[in-house]
Every structure is written in structure tokens, then in C-alpha cells.
Length: 145
Image (cartoon, rainbow, N blue to C red; front, side, top):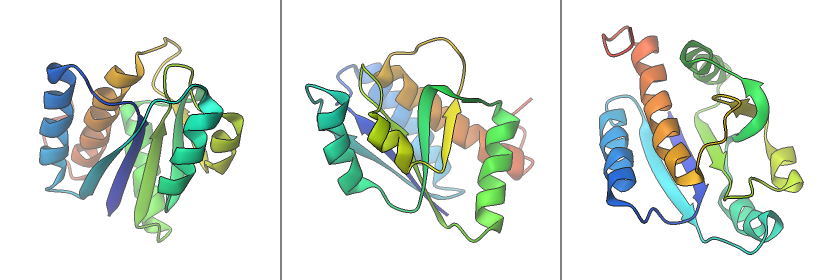
């Protein structure tokens, strides 16, 4: 399976960059994972123009108003997409003002990891960790407890 994470903004803090690199390295055991950075725009609509150029496969938008999911739910979602023949998943993370309505409409799924608002740079590390956790759940490895 191929996993794309399309995220707005550059990671400026080394600790977030290190976390994302570590989880994507761990994910190599289970899938091909790449992170695609989109430059910050003045508005979600401006960012959306760039996001749409990078979208492929089954699109899943991370949005605070999305369906609240657990780690197990994400694992189940990935498993169901794979079983349905979807070999490429693209997760979207908007900028500080979120994703435009047009970009959200491209998504087959809209998910949320909580009702709290996370900084979009932190969300990238959280998403990488949750994708890694999902694959460990699916492969019955001891990471998830």
C-alpha cells in the first residue's frame, strides 16, 4: 500500500521533523509512505489549489469536524480500503485555518482524532504515529496496547 500525507506548511521545529521522519521510517516495514509539503497560502482556498495538484488515490481529510475515530477505527478503515482494492491513500492536513470546503469535498472520508484543535505541524506527527499504530494493530505487533 502507498500512503501519502499532503500537509500545508514546512516543519520548522526540528522535534516535529524528527518525529515525522522516525514514524515514516518505521512505516517502511508496512507500506510506502511519503510526506508532501504544500507552501502556506494566504487562505485555505489558495492552499487548496496546490493541494489538489498533489491528490491521488483515496482521499482522507483530517478535519476537526470530521468523524471522530480511534486508533482501531483507523486500522479498520485502512484494512477496508485495502480490501476494496484501494492501494493508495492520501491523507490531507490543512494549514492553520484548515482545509477549504472544495478540498474537503474531494475527500472520501473526513476524520478527526479529537475535538481539540491541534497545531497543523503537530498534527503531521500525530497522523504519522496513528498510521503506524494502525498498521501494528493490523499486523498484531506489540506496539499498540
